[in-house]
Length: 339
Image 1 (cartoon, rainbow, N blue to C red):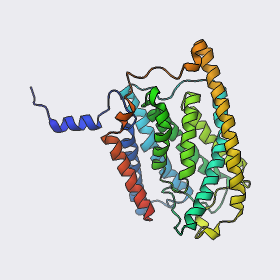
Image 2 (cartoon, rainbow, N blue to C red):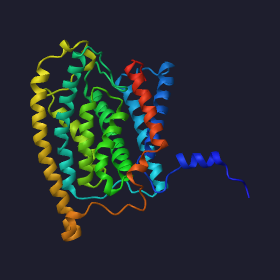
Image 3 (cartoon, one colour):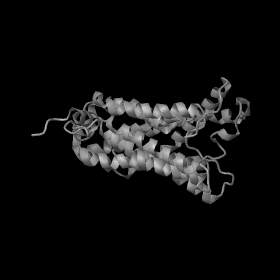
Image 4 (tube, one colour):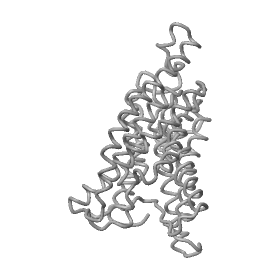
């Protein structure tokens, strides 16, 4: 009989698929996938073998699709197979999905307003513009370019975010600990984004998507909410817009019209959030009451205590290594090093 290998046992315990599963395990794979994508992009684009840059719509879209696939989609496909998780959720009716899509309106108002206000005060303090790790700039705003931009910078990332953060990670937290996910998942979403100007709005978005995931009961609620946010950005173009970072040098470069639209937009967004929170809650209650009778109001989801570990088990070696990798990316980004 072969003697046990202590090194192998250490790595299996720290990095093998945990049983029962925990939410923190998967974040390391998001970090590894992001690192692999950014390194590959650096090698390919620095070699000059491609006829476009990383900030072109095609170049940025290519990197975004690769990063979404490698960092979010692949872990969400392969990890559940080995851990016995059902991450997609259940179908709770068209009503919740429609409300999820429409709730994208206040999400857009929040993100656009916070981006404008946050960027102004950041520059007002004498700081320089910090560009996101991935962004594109189009000289010609053609319909083809707009369609490509919507698909690559909105719909595909929205799918990856919904599947990974509100599918895989959400399913790795017990029902009794779900309230804690309203803080952890948005924070990790912000960390993954590598997008400094959008941090305040993205954090609020992450909290709202947790609510949508809970009431919709599936990952398609968050996806439709994010898709709706992009849709309403087109509808409200000219009413409230996000400031273009490429034209800014100091805070004085921002027209005052951004404040005239951003402040009222926050008020409107707050009212809409209250409305959609009530509507989504009503749809969820109606569904659970129809399915489970008088006990429907107490129902949340099937008991997952046999497959999912307690919340504190998510703070493990793999999770902290994933955080360290993203922190390194943030430091590089603040130093102005293009990833």
